[in-house]
Length: 262
Ligand SMILES: Nc1ncnc2c1ncn2[C@@H]1O[C@H](COP(=O)(O)OP(=O)(O)OP(=O)(O)O)[C@@H](O)[C@H]1O
Ligand SMILES: [Mg+2]
Image 1 (tube, rainbow, N blue to C red):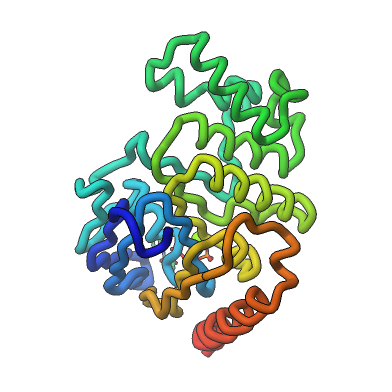
Image 2: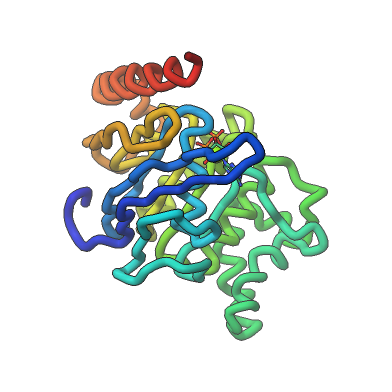
């Protein structure tokens, strides 16, 4: 798994400087890393260190100031169906039902109606929302909306999933449940995942690697391999292996939080 196979995403000396009223903000200062096909990479780091900026550059939503990202060897110059994004705030279409939201991308891709229905239902079942197919977003809880967003991303069948704190707004119980669902789905239909979180436990339980970013201007401070075998579940969080790596990552991240405060 980790370290094998072929490079899916190449992040090559990416720099990003924003112009703001207060002057220039260097959000990313030379970020390079290779992400392998089907690899699950978690990203942690203090607020403002450039995590979302990096995700948006990989997604083709933001242009780097210099450097480039390559997906399957091709330079990313805009959004593409092979790269699906899940944001923290669900971003569902309020005028569409659960099924309508999940089918949306498929319709855009020109998938035939019956096929789109079949695919949508498969992923709606995966996230256990089959009783809510005809409900509208306003009728759903936060956790349910986030399930729809995940089903929608999977249904479009991207080979890369970019997730920016997708569970950040959820209560602890819903969060662990969605972690389990995401783990099971990734174990079944491996995809290359780039998953941002502030939660070190979440980063470790999901990821084959945890990227620790340093305080602004964002750089990669360290990449930690998580050599805990899959399948993993919540009980994995009690193991010594897990606790050891958690202590280590937490101490490294904490230093960066302190650097921000200074
Ligand atoms: N459009 C923009 N214009 C100006 N500055 C920006 C813009 N987007 C981000 N920044 C700045 O770039 C830096 C990195 O922001 P980014 O959103 O990537 O951080 P982050 O690591 O995702 O933080 P958080 O954990 O709070 O989500 C911040 O200092 C932010 O103020
Ligand atoms: Mg962010």
